[in-house]
Amino acid sequence: MAQTADFIDEKEIWDILETGKAPSRSLFEEILSKAGEARGISAGESAAMLQVTDPSWLDEMYAAARDIKERIYGKRLVLFAPLYVSDYCVNNCTYCGYRRDNRFHRRRLTMEEVSKEVRILESMGHKRLAIECGEDPVNCPIDYVTDVIQAVYSTWNDNGNIRRVNVNIAATTIEEYRLLKEAKIGTYILFQETYDRGTYRSVHSGPKQDYDWHTTAHDRAMRAGIDDVGIGVLFGLADWRFEVLGLLQHAAHLDREFGVGPHTISVPRLRPAAGVDIDQYPHLVTDSQFRRIVAVLRLAVPYTGMILSTRERPGFRDEVIATGISQISAGSCTGVGGYSAETRACGGGVAGGGAACAAAACAGGSGGAAGAASYESPQFKVDDTRSPDEIIRSLAKSGYIPSYCTACYRQGRTGDRFMALAKTGKIKEVCAPNAILTFKEYLLDYATEETKRAGEHAIEQHLATIPSDEVREETKRRLRLIEAGTRDLYF
Ligand code: SF4
Ligand code: SF4
Image 1 (cartoon, rainbow, N blue to C red):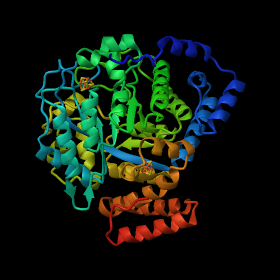
Image 2: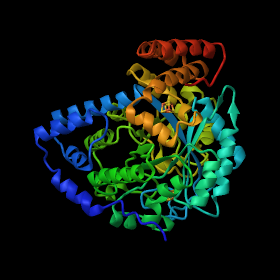
Image 3: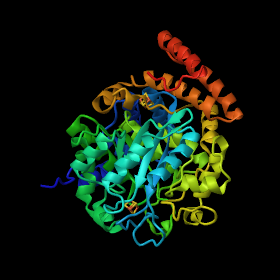
Image 4: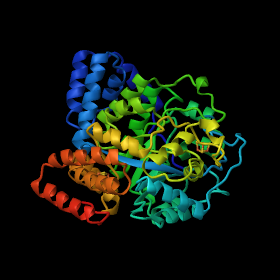
């Protein structure tokens, strides 16, 4: 019998939110102190923190969230890019530019086109991709997806190749998840969109409308042997406090059932897209609420990677990153074939700063398809249109160490092995040196001169913070090997 998603208890969520209203200062301090141990806080405590509005309390909460992120993962920020391979879709999600009722020329990439897109992404320095596609069993069956994964892993560009492929495809069967596992995916990502059943029904039509099938997809993926799964909500569809508690119930369920919580939580906000009038949605999330969402998730599930996309504008993105984010996308195009199309549009050469023109043209939302771009419609509008090089320079100057690390997946540190290290904060002992090594590769192979200067300075600073003499010296030795031409060294 099909599994029901009874681990999402809507009544309990509303009750908890009611109880958590207007927390006292003493309760706030008590929760903050518990959160500071980086072992998480309960749903009730999270509900109270979500309903704090005093600006000075919020500043304390943001600082605590940042400290927890740094206690677990250090100062590293992992970078990745999405790769949209097919915009065929049998669903009609009201918030998405790919929805069935939108009329545009749909397509999926050939394997040659996949390789071309991958080479462009590699020339920007990327080592980690997330494959994205709509749901269409005829035009985008599982065999096509596994062929794409194979094409991505086997495409090389000078010094670079993609070392980790995460996959975001529609909820499917255990048999098909096994095929993804055999294709050596990193994380299987599926956003819930909304945990509110009524809203879920009203914004979806097509196979995705089945709430139980969709919400239990991660269970099937884990039963199929996929160790790492990612969850997320599209903030703006239903009450944001409800959605955060839905995410926490989902995370707790996975932890209980499989001994492993979600590897990542994504926090996209509703964005304009072709045929999507976001002003019609009554639950749009303000910037201040959005920071609270990120901070409370970091306090509640400190071990989980938290992902921020290019949906957010640059200045605000930096603020949110400082509230506990551990992974970001950079230089993203959200249209099928978008990287190649925009490379042609800007006259080629995407290395370093060139990628900015790719992303900038992508950012036109439905209008982004106009002009020289040959892809028809992006899935949503991007707001951070900086190139990876610009983003990296800004991160390095702000005290972060940008990371292209994929070591855990390749060292077999997945699932419960990864969680044991993340939950105890030991993971940062490898995150920091791996970030330094992969950042060095980036600086040598892809960076502009300005970024190289900022980056070398950052490497010196972060090297000095490695607590173990032995690991620091070994990292220095490997840096010399990278300078001499060796690549892909990791702990
Ligand atoms: Fe299709 Fe996904 Fe867009 Fe829904 S959100 S219309 S399933 S691509
Ligand atoms: Fe991620 Fe593991 Fe690398 Fe840290 S060491 S950045 S957790 S892959």
